[in-house]
Image (cartoon, rainbow over all chains, first blue to last red; front, side, top):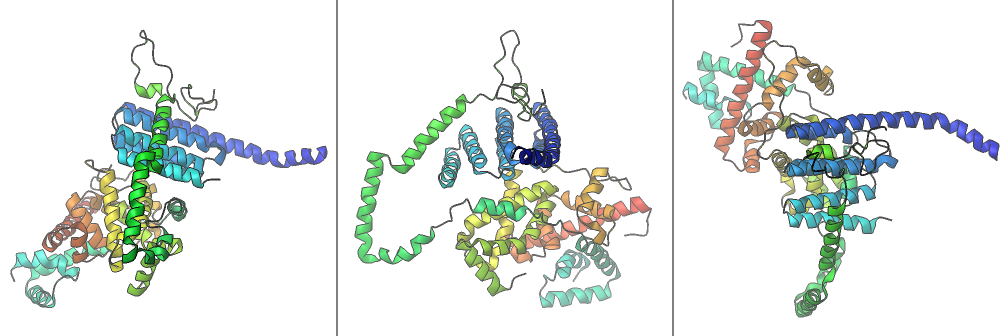
Length: 141
Length: 170
Length: 198
C-alpha cells in the first residue's frame, strides 16, 4: 500500500507542480491588476475601473481560490462606494458574479450587492438581492 | 422633385423605405440629374463598407453563464398556479377573500415570512458593518489615510483581513 | 432566422420557463445583440457582459411580451436600456479617431484580429477606422444608424423601439450615412493621397 501511495504521489506531482505554477501566475496577475484598479480609484479615473477589473475576473481561478474573487469584489466595491461611485461598484460586483461558479460565492456576492444598495438608499433593490441570496441558500445542498 | 429633396431621400431609397410612387419620382430625377446620381453612387460606397464590416462572434461560454443565472431565477409565475386556476371561479371568490384576509391579519400580527426576511436582512447588515476589511485606522500622528491604502489586496498569499495586499506573496 | 410561427412557438415556450427554447432564441439572436452593443459601446468586453445581462433580463420578462413577432425589437430595446443604464450621464470610453494616414496602435490591430477580419474584403485597418467613425457618431444618430445599417431593422421598427417619429429616424439615418461616408473618404484621402474621391 505505501508503495502505491508513493507511486500516486509521483504520478500526481508534475500535475501538482504545474497547477501550483499556473496558480502562482494567476495570483500574481490578479495582484498586479488589483493594484492598478486601486490606483485608478485613487486618481479618480473611475471610467477605466471596470475595463481593468475585468482582467481580474476573467482570470482562470481554480474553485479552491474562488473566495478570493468574492473578497476582491467586496474590497473594490467598498473603495468605489467610498467615492460615491455606486453604479460602477454594482457593475464590478456583477463582474464578480459572472466569474464565480459556486453557490456560496454567489450568495456572498448577492448579499454584498444588497449591502451596497442599502448604502445607496435603494432599500427595495437591497431587499430583492438579499432575498435572492436566501433563495439560493435554501436551494443549495 | 428638387435636388435637395432627392438627396434627403437617397438613404431611405437605398434602405427600401420609400413608397412605390416616391421611388418612381426619385428614380426619374436620378436619370435626369448627374450631381444627384453621383451623390447616389457615393452613398452606395458607404453601404458597401458597412455591409462588409465583420461581426464579433459570441464567446462559447456565454450560454453557460446565462444558463447558470436563469436556472437560479424563479420563473415569473410558478407553473403550479395554472392547473389550480379553475378553483378561482366565481363561487370561490368569497372563500379566497376570506383566506386572504386571515393571511393578511396573521402577517400583521405574527410577522410572516416577509417580516422574517427583513429581520434576517437587518442582522446581516449589522454583521456586514462589523466586517473588518481594512487595516486598523491610522493613529492621530499618522494622519488620515486615503481609503485605497487602507484596503487590503486579497490576492496576497498569506492574506487575512488585516493584510494590506491579499495577492502579495510574503 | 426563425419563421413567424416557429418564433412564436419558441417565445411562448421560453416564456413558460422552457430553458431549451430560450437557448434556441439565444442562438438566433445573441450575435446580433452582441454586435449591436459592441457598436454602441466600442468595447468587446462590455458588449459580452451586457449581452449576458440582456438575455437574463429577457428571460425574466418574457411573459410581458405581448406580440412574439416583436421579439427582436423588444430584445434590442432591452440591450439599449442596459447600455444607457451603464453609461447614464457618461459617454462610453472611446479610443480617439485615428489621424488621417496614421498607424493604428498595436492594441487596435489585436482588437481587429479577434474579429476574424481575414474574411473581410476591407483591410483590417479600414475596418477599424469605420468602426471608430460609427462609434463616434452623435448618440442620437448612432443608435438608429446601427439598427438600420447593420441590423437591417426597418425605420418603422426603429421608430417604435426608440419611441421617435418616422421622420426623425429617417433624417438621422441619412445624416449618419452621410457622416460615415464623408469621414471615411476624408481618411482615405489623407492615407492614400486620393484627390479624385468626392
